[in-house]
Length: 118
Image 1 (cartoon, rainbow, N blue to C red):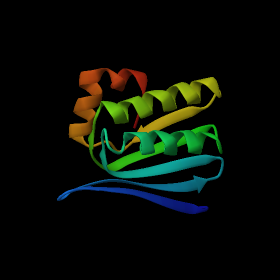
Image 2 (image 1 turned 120 degrees about the vertical axis):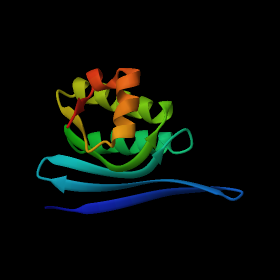
Image 3 (image 1 turned 180 degrees about the vertical axis):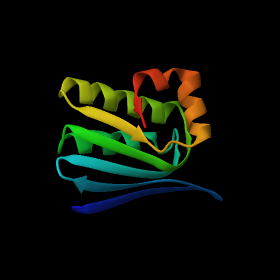
Image 4 (image 1 turned 90 degrees about the vertical axis):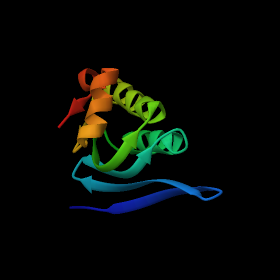
């Protein structure tokens, strides 16, 4: 399939731990960004950076949300910036495998109409 690189952002706040994990997989010219955990105010900037870093390498990005349990407005901002980046490069960004709870957030916010969701 290609090369794989992984990043983990782990932040500890007293007894609470917040993490978003990303793994980048090259599939020809396309990059699959596998995301797991919570994409929220604490991890949203890192998530956005991972999307933009992927677009520096390709114009085709698939974001695998199969293991994402929650997304906040900070995560939605990262997706919006990613979609705008894809459009400006003449490329594409797809979100794949979102759970019913994440899909409900997309529908409530109108992101289901802005993003390509598989």
